[in-house]
Each structure stands twice: as C-alpha cells, then as structure tokens.
Image (cartoon, rainbow over all chains, first blue to last red; front, side, top):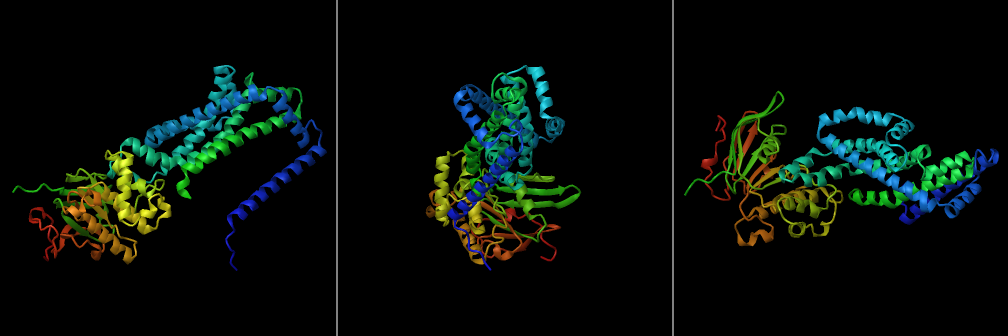
Length: 259
Length: 246
C-alpha cells in the first residue's frame, strides 16, 4: 500500500492540532495538580493568569524590570556568543590554543551556575555588570564548543578550492569557515538563549535590585505562588520572542541553502 | 624566435606522504596553449600531480615551477560552496581576482547562460543535478581566464551524453585567439595550457597534443599525438621518460 503525499496546508493544520492537544493536556494536568495540592504549592492556571494580568498592568514590570532583564540577557548573549565565536575560530585554526583552552572550557561547563554567581558577586558586586558577565561566562563555552565542531567539519576540499582561486583570508573566513559553522552555531544560539534567561534570572534573584529575578525573589519571600508562576510565563515569553522572532528567521535565512 | 617560457616546469619533482612515495623524479613541461593528457590507474598520483601544479601541495623534492597568473581547476567532485548559488560560486573567484560583485555576477551569469544554466543561476548546488554541478565547476574554472587549466577526471560519474556535452563545451571554450571567442563570449583571451588527468583514454579532449602515462616508475609517452591543435613545437618541452619498449 502506498501513501499519497500529504498536502502542505493539511500537514500544517495537523501539526498545529497536535501542538494544541499537547498544550491542552499540559493545562489539564496543571489544573488537576492545582486541585490536588494547596495553592501555596501549585497555583492554578486561572490564578496564574490573574497574577500575570496584574503583573503586566499594575506593576512596573514592563517599564522597569522586564527591559532591564531583557537588556542583560541580550548583552550576556552577545558577550558570550561573541567570545565563544572568536575563541572557537581561533582554537579551530590553532590546535595548541585549543589544547590551552580545554581546561577553562571544562571548568566553565562543569561548575554549577550558582557557584559562578557567588564568585561573580564577590568580584563584581551586585547589578548589571555582574549579571552580564555571568551570562557571558555561562554561554561562551556552549558557543565555543559548537564553533569548534563546525571548524572541525570544514570540508578540506573547499579549502583547497579556495587556495586554487586565491581567495583572500577574509573571503575564506566569510565564505568557507563561517558558513561551515553556521548550522552548529545557530543550534547553540537557540540553546544559549534559554540558558541566558535562566542565568540572568538566577543572578538577579541572588544579587540584583532590578529585573525579573528581583520581583521573583520578592514573590518568593511573600509566598505569592501565582505571581511566581506568572513570572515564569513572562520569562518563557521573552525566550519565545527571542527564539521565534529573531533566531529562527535568522537560522532559516542562513541555512536556506539546505532546503 | 625565442623559446617560449613554459607555463609549468617540473624537474625531478617528488612527492612523499610520510614514508610513502607518491611519485618521484618526475619531469614535465607545459607550453602556453598546450593540452596534455595524463593517463594512469587510480591511486598512482594523478590528482597529487595536479595539486602540486595548483600550488596547494608542496613538492617534497625537485623543482616545481608554475608561471601562471591564474589557475582554473575542475575537480573530480565539483567542490562548489553549498551555501552559495550557482551564480555566486562562479562569481566568487572573480571577486577574489579583484572584480566587484556586480561585475563578477554579470560575467558569471553570461557564462552560465551560455552553458545552458540560465534557469538555474539562483539555485543552490543541492538543487542542481550532478551534471549541472560539474558544468558550474567547469564554468568557474574558465571564468577566471586561466593561464593553466587543471582537469581532474572532470567527466567521471556523468552519463555518456552529458560527458560528450561537457567535452564539447570545454573544447569550445578552449578555442582561443578567434574573434568569435573573446572574453565576452566566455572563451579564453589567452590560450590556456591544459593538464587533463584521467584513467580513461577516450575521455581525453580531441585537442590533446600529448598523452603521457603516469605509472609507479614515472611519466612516459603513452602514444604519439595524432592531431596537434596548436602545431607548437613540443620537442622542447618533452622531458618525459620513454619506456624501454618505445
């Protein structure tokens, strides 16, 4: 028996249907858990929604805290991605440097985030520089490893071709190396985006007087579970916006040759 | 009339990889415009010879001199940048040679259109057939107006009809010196010396002036040329060893 190819629109509708079914199942389980446990432990979806509306309308979340966290996240992502990219390119081109950087990479990827937060607070105090440096430190190794993987996968045949046609170093870097690392780099950036919001909020909870993490710390102190849940939704929204509106379109554009 | 400076001059050239000698004491000279075919079984070092000629692999010994300002190379596998369109793959070496992207793309488009790829200029290699990719690779090599054109089994893997088309395309583009085949037409302004390696004698171009055979004991004359294209005096360039039987 053969299956006729699924029309594109029908396939999309079916995929959307499965996603909505997944979301409905999640909400159902959440509501069931809220009914089973105290609202101090699990806030119901409805209570979370009300807390979210309150957060967005009645507090300075959108005018003060969210922009600060978003800026820290963007700066940390930029710093970490930039450092990881440059270090990865250099280490990919220079094996001794790669060996030199291996211990630092291992340490940064192995030490728990909360320990790095403590050390960063001791070194940099509280506030934006600490949060940004921290996010950068956590993100850089992820990007570094992805770039190295990409550098290892550069087709030597393409490098020979570039040599025959005497492509200058800048052209080789742009048209051969950077494009070879584009796919693993794009995947690493998606992971890094999620990590950056996590680490920024963690750092703000522990040592900042502004940002989503600051409101989260206050909500935890006041046992406002619904507000904590609502802040989780806000941070998910930030990640979703960055990933779906910025990174995915960029990824599609850079990797359009694969289609 | 003075002697013509060879485009390629190999004297006692040896290539080793670790303890293994790929070939040794190889002598070869190529005059401008000369088309030389090199036959030999797989693994004998034909591609290595081309890589030394292209300057991407240093010789382990001997003197390997290449007096070519620009080199075109048709690799056995196309080696197109998968993330660039057919047009940009041809334009890129032209930009590297100093043209602007606009000029390079214009020239690349003209050359690709003349090779039947007008409908595929903006296609990425993944969307091209194997024959089309090889044609793009050939156009890329010719677009730079090479003084030395290196062909590494360029017709391998193509069906017979396409193989014939490619050979004709190459012959047409190599036809230099005629006003009908100037730069605008996509031909070569100066006659390019061609080094064509293959394991299959029928694949050699009709204009091949000399055919040599590369074996474990070096380069030998395979057969006398039956149809010299240029009529150039090849005697001065024939330093290849003759096998004892000849």
